[in-house]
Structures are given as C-alpha cells and as structure tokens.
Image (cartoon, rainbow, N blue to C red):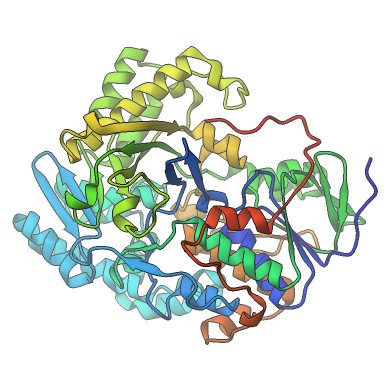
Length: 577
C-alpha cells in the first residue's frame, strides 16, 4: 500500500459544479484543498466531449436562468475573482423555449405577463383558469431565494409569510393544483412539460419547485455560456489552482476514512491514502453513505432514510452532428417536441410499469410514437465558437425522460457491467435513438438527410460515467416528501464529513449544484459565506488568475492543463457509452 499523504486541510470528492465551487471557496479562504475526480476530465455534467476531430457536444449545460449582473451564478464567479470572465449569451426573449404539439405551438418568453398572454392565446376557453394558476406560480416563485429559502427552517418560515394566502399551495403536488382548476389534458401537458428540467413528475412535484423554476427563467430569460458548459468548470478550476489548491483526475475514491468517530481522509482505489480533517463529498448521496462511508459508521435511522430516497427520473440523450447551419432556419430557442398531448410524467410511468408487459416490438412502437423530446441546438445558442461543428454545420442534442427500470432496457439488473454487449440493450437503445431522431425531423423537416454523426447515452451510460444511482444526473427526486426541509444539508452526523451536490437542499441544475457547494464551504468554514458573496464581496484575488491566451478560449485544453492525472492503479475500464 502507498504511503499516506498528509498536509491537506480539505479533500473534495468530485469535480462537478458543487465540488469545484466548494473547493474554490475553501481555497480563496486560505484552506489547502485537493479535488479528487475519478474521470479523465473535470466538470461532471458541465464537461464537453469531442468526436472525429470536428464535433463538440455539451453533456449537461443546455441553458441557464438568472444570468444578468447580480444573478446567482455571475455573483458566485465574481466572489472567486472571476468577474466578467464568463460571457452569458441571451436566448430569444420572445421565446427561449418553444413547446410544440402536432396541432399547437406555445412559446415561453421572458416575463410573467408574456407567459400568461401566450398561454391564453393558445387556450382562450381556459383564460380564467390560466390567470388563476399563473398567479399562484408568480406569487410563490417571486418569493423564492434560490440560496436562502431552503437553507434553514427560519428562512422557510419567512418564505411562507411572504407568500401570504398562496403559501398553502407551496407544498401541494402540481397535479393537485391542476385537478382543482380542472384543466384540460392539453393545457396540463403544456404547463407540466418543464418537469424534465428537474426530473420529477407532476404527481409528486411540489408547486413551489415548479414556481421557482419558472421564476428562475422568466425573470431574465434563457442564457447560454459562451464557449459551452466547460467554461464554467474551467473558471472555477482556475480559481482553485491560483489560490493554492490542487485538482487530480483518475483519482477514484473507494473509501472515506473514519477514525475514532470522525473523518480522517480518504483511500483511493489503488490503495493510496490521503489524510485531512475535512472531506466534502459531492458523489451520489447513496454511494457516499452506503459505499464510501459504510453502514457500520451510520445510525440506523440514517440508513433507513438513505435507502428510502427516491431518485429523480433519468434521461436518454442523442447527440447529432449535421452538415447544415440551423441558425438560418430557427430562432434562438429550445424545443419541447411532444408527439401527443399526454402528461409527460404519466407517460414515463406507464412505459416503466409496463416494461415487463411489452414485448420489444411493442416497446419500440410505444417509444417511437409517444416519447417527447427536449431539443437544443448549441451552434444557434453560441454562434461564436469554431469548435462545435465544421463551418456550415450544427450540433443538436435531443433528450427525453425515460424509465430507470433495467427491464425496460432489456437488462436483468442495473449492475450489469457488460450491458453494452447485451443484444436486447442495444436494440432498445437504437429504438430510443430512432424516436429522438424522429422528434428532431418533425421539428426540422428533411434534416435526416444531413445527419453526419449520431451518438446516444442511456441511464446506464450516466451511471457508468458518474457513478450515480438509477442513472439520474439530478440526485434524489424533488418530490413533496423530499423537498425543502426534507432534503439533506451539508453537515452530516460524522464530524468532519460534509456533503454537497444535487441531492442537497438546493436541488438539481447548474445553479443548484453551485449553491450547494457554496453553502458546504460556508458550513466547513463556520461563516455565512453566501451572504458575503451575494452582498458583493470578492474573496478571491483576480490578480492571481492568469490572463487567457490569444484566440478562442479552449475550455477543454484549459481544464486538462489545470489537473494532475493520477496514475491509474484500479482495474476499472475507461467509460464507454
């Protein structure tokens, strides 16, 4: 076994937005911090990947809200000394999202008034219902502070007081709100189509979550970071390294060390131990507790709670490279392409519950006919980059919530390490790919003749790359019983062990993950660092961060240059899709 390495103040497991933000704020506060990433590239779901020397795809950053000066994400970067070093590009203010059915199109614009007006124009017979429901969303959504509201019971009480007579709706399931107002099936489908943004069906989603999502985007519209999602991890990594921290890739943690009832460091898969009094784990919450810590170190009630967590719905993703410039054919919008008027959550539940009842041909027909798709075109959102596609080309991602049940994918178990070799799995993957391509072709007629690259990822792919439960990038589901005060906070029952990530109080998404990292750092430091950052304090030293080289900023090359690659000593194979 390798000799133990000492001298670190804190070890951070995982290099997604939560891990890099936590490490960044620990580093600028004078802590010697080490980030450990099991994969070859940092960034988690913000990283990009390249294919055939000509295509670049963004894994998980599709669009962002609240990116005007003073927004949460710009302020987080500002606090680390990175003010102005990420340019956020606005999407179409008249419709950053476009919801399409065979007989209906609804655009989602910036601003509550425009949102209400577009809904009423599409459903004039339900105008009064729309007015009442949007009033509920707006009143509740405007009271949510993404950083403070879920941080304590006191803040939650203040939030409820601000909501006034609308407060009782906050923790009611979204579907119940629709039931009470007797909405038509098509209107329900339009109002709930964004449930894919947080991976929870309307039957379990609290109204406050949906209202907060709408406020996040309607308040300032949709945005996309110039250079793609990897620019976020690049800027965070620069701040960490510039302030004395270190980042290591291929550094798989297989155990969090607990000695005398408190955290003592970690052990890597190859046997090396790294010692520190503080460990911040941003790994999947179930894996953190059950695998890395171990059941023997946990209270019985903690084990029951962790095992009972319901995970968010996973996704199926298809990445396409095409040889035409779609910016000439579309506004700067995302599409929610819905082939039927079904409630999305009910559809996915039906497909999952009937996985064993459908034969493969029937599953093929069901998936192809019914699966909706979220379609986003990176080259339209960020026309400045030369790395996404060859000149005159475009890159597209189409994705849909899908059942996590391995049987739906033709597998006997979610732990099937050889899933990629299973014929039934490959068949279902191809069927789902065909369904996503069909939604893209319905949105852009004739595009099927211009596809030059196709690649797909299933929930099993997500698990293999990021080691998450049930293949979801969104952590535990934001359902009524797992939201707000019912979600974990950074401090754990083991002294010295802290957690961050999408399963904590701040929820899924880029901003939620980053906020969880900020609050984890503040909990470690014993100070309200979030209040400092959002009041405008700059804790990092901009002078320490090197200027970018001339030309287009290569985010992938930057993050690789900032990380030290650990010699791989485990037997794990490099991830494949």
